[in-house]
Amino acid sequence: MTLKPTGAQREYLDELRSELLRAAYQRTQQLTSLSPAGLDEDPVQAAHRASVRRILDQVHEALDRMDAGTYGECVACGRLLALLDLRRRPWVDCCDTCARSSV
Image (cartoon, rainbow, N blue to C red):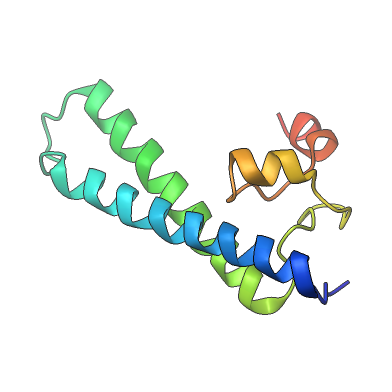
């Protein structure tokens, strides 16, 4: 299902796009500020780097879904995501039900 937002929905999506772009910038800056990965890297720092990279990837995927017109749909079942979840984490891609079942 492809969403066709209008009016206030379009404005809301534009706000979320701005938040996603900010998040991408912030995560990129975080990765840049971390010391380069090495063979003797601290496991905590490696986990932090992996977490930041995972969120950055999710942000880019969310921007791709916006461009495709499928942003706001669960990638697993197709149901619409809760607006509160999108506001809290605009890169979220699964509804609560599907996220719980994948754990």
